[in-house]
Image (cartoon, rainbow, N blue to C red):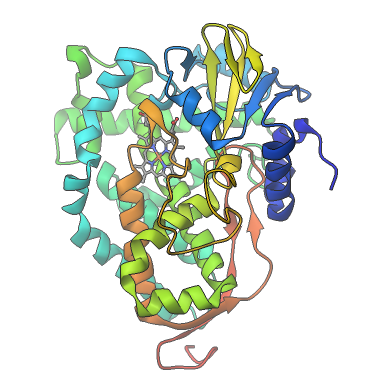
Length: 421
Ligand code: HEM
């Protein structure tokens, strides 16, 4: 296959998994630090090797997380500046640097630590079984994505945040609209990508402003109450900081985890021997969950902004340059993982970069792993067999992307395929 570096900005690349993985392999081996200048976007460097990304992430003072944080067409960045004052549109934790980032992260950090997440084991196990039970009513065939996988991590995220079940469908739609804004199937009709994103942002503001009013008047035991009333660093949050906080907690956790669950199931269907090993030995659920996240790497990149000249792998970055950290490529780096291109549920060393690395490393990583383990534990109890039942489709977007449709047919334990209805 022939590639050009600028293809990294082409949403269509992300809809074609074979091409995407070949492209990533080409990047790692031929152009580990490459200059991209895709039409309509400001130029940037692409870094695709595991060791190089870690080197960069260890130096957050030289490589700032903001203001440019993800890949967007320049016209969208301009619209964001016009309407919201910053090119990213949303001022969330992932793009704030230094002390303020530490203060803001500190507001919810303890909530997401392993010891607190362990307290949620019962709740998450119950939710996993509740969503797995949906297989019983689907007649032996379903779209695993839209029927089950999207909804379960959404319910977990909304329960933690404190959003009513009645608002879940709206939240799911907004997340898909935010992350999928370059996918023509997702963009609001008659709008440009920039108009679409501005409209989505306004919808978030309208929704969460009501939540703030409610939680300030009637505090509850939920993360929305922390965000509505919190004063990180003994300072009030600005409206933009508060909105960014709600949005990241409402969006970061569910689409990503859903993509790993759907991709994890596809990997097991593609490797039936590993499905049977997991069924027989549930102590493998932990390494399996981590491998499913490495394998799917739903967050394909984040950007860093260079604050002083720096040399990496023989290439000089200048102050003011932008660097895309390609987590998608780095999670299959042959220098970091033995047989990197094979799905191995018992991989013992698995320090992948799908959760990032350094001060912004994913706050929800323990929760995400627990959700995946609980889901597959319940699913393997419920399903006797499962197979693909049509083409798997992926979202066409260069930021958070993963399976959007996974048609499957299955048999419940003790019955044959197609007998459930
Ligand atoms: C498989 C699932 C997930 C993946 C692949 C994922 C991936 C990531 C990545 C790559 C980052 C940025 C790291 C960096 O810039 O170095 C991040 C940050 C973050 N994630 Fe996750 N995430 C997942 C699940 C979750 C969940 C379940 C939550 C919780 C609700 C969550 C909340 C956050 C937050 C709040 C941040 C910002 C942290 C900061 O900037 O300090 N994520 N995640």
